[in-house]
Each structure stands twice: as structure tokens, then as C-alpha cells.
Image (cartoon, rainbow over all chains, first blue to last red; front, side):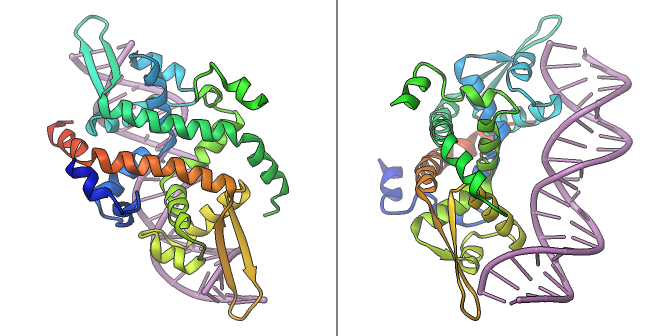
Length: 127
Length: 127
DNA sequence: CGGAATCCTACATGATACTG
DNA sequence: CAGTATCATGTAGGATTCCG
């Protein structure tokens, strides 16, 4: 596959080095807690706006809207409007969104696995 | 292993659900572009402060300092001061830092792999 | 209910200058 | 060179209000 051949031999963050590259832009979009928590939450099942707001603890109405728009713009989340009254809007992960989810899972697992270690380090740290 | 048994059967983001949990706090620390780019850059080799500033394109002196302190506090990066004149300060990944690096690599690979797809999605998006 | 728009505040970030 | 402090500014983010 052509894409894979181009990547072989390069560090995985090769293009992220340039501050103005598309890769860096996407990386910056995605590397923030709200986006990743939304992705994780949608991974279980399709959810409505208000369900998401309830399940992603601490997120505000505004942040949820902004991040959903960003994820939709990047094609990671699909937005479906049911023209009923009151309106019903559902959000689902797309294929790339589900692929991203798999990588976020790894990050979540890392967090769980090193909780204790990090807590200890914080205790030792005297900044 | 006790830790593994506790995690089995739970979604990987189980504890991240609580906005006030330690897991969420660590996740929020780590899920930001500067921290992750620093981790990626340090993965190749130990670097001095000024080398890092040059290699992580776009990062400011201040952001680099702040993020290095945060990573050091969480025990992901080790800071070594050589008492010379001028001073020489080197930063290295710790074991948990290297483990994190592996997961960030996956995120970088995801970014590279879906670049085109995302660019297309952006073209279609009319927000 | 979902979302856009407004206003307002706090904090993140950059630029600069200073110290050891 | 590495790091801190200070100041200025932008932007993130919350609360609120209005609209379909």
C-alpha cells in the first residue's frame, strides 16, 4: 500500500514537526481532553446531545457544541437530525472516529496503569 | 496481578468519567498537544532545554518550561542539572514516560494514516 | 431539545526583561 | 544556558438568553 511505504522508516511524528502542517493542525484538534472524552463516550453507542452532556462529566453546553462541530468538521463524528418536535440530534463515530477511539483507549489504559506510580511521583516532587 | 484483575471488564475510561478523579486529572495533564509533542521529541534521545525548544517547532520558552515542570511533577520526565558554567540541563523520559510515548506514537500514526480522509471531510463540511 | 449568540471572566500564552 | 518574573493580550470557557 502506497501510504504505508511512504511512512516506513520515518518517525511516527515526522510531519507533526512543522507547526504549520496539516498533520500538526489535526493533532492539535484531537489532542485535547474534551475531544478525546467525547470520542470515548460515543464509542459505546450513539448518543443524543443531552445524553452526551450528562455522560461527559464537567463539560459545558458550549464546549460540547464546539467540540462536536470540530469533530464533525474533521469527519470523526456524524450528526443526524431527526426532524421531530422537539428535535432529536444523534451523534455517532465514523470509521476514522472509531479508529481514533482505539488509540484513545490505549491512552486511557496507560492512565489507569500508571495511576499509582504518578501519584507517588507527585508526592516526591518538590517544585 | 491485582491491578489487572481490577481493570478487567471495565471500559478503559471507567475512572475518567468523574471530573474530580485523579485519573481525569492526569488525563487532562497529558491530553494536550505540547505535552505530547515534547514526549515524542524526547523519545528519540535525551535533550537539553534549548534543543527541545528548537525541535518542538512553535513552542515558546514559557510553554516549554511549564510543560516540562508538569511532566517532571508527574514523573514522566527526569531533569538532570550539570553544575557547569554555563549550566547544562538535560531531560530524559522515565519508564512511565516511555510507556506513554508508545501510546502517543499510535496517535501520531493515526494522524498520518487519516490525513487525506480528514482533509476530504473538511472540504465537504459546510458549517 | 439542540444550538446560536452574547457577555464576561479567568486563565493560557507570548514577549520581554532580569538573575545565577 | 536555563529559569523566573512581569506585563500585556488573546482566547478558552461559563452563564445566560433567545430561536427553531
